[in-house]
Image 1 (cartoon, rainbow, N blue to C red):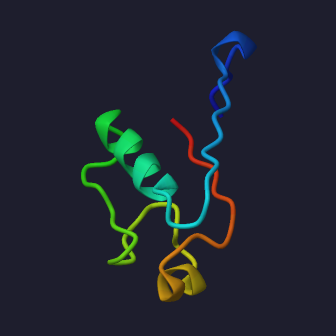
Image 2: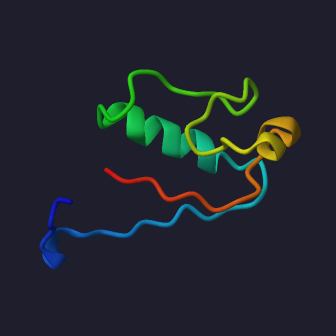
Length: 69
């Protein structure tokens, strides 16, 4: 496992009302950083953070997701 120096660790929280675009923003950030090769879609159930079946059925996030860069 890679060891990280504390001064290089940043924690960011995306907080907002339902359907305000948090998942879309996270997808875009990961895509623009080159960590994923395509943007997922909440409506299509292809986002990297909404991977539980209930989230895909409802079309919104139910559980908190950690994303590492």
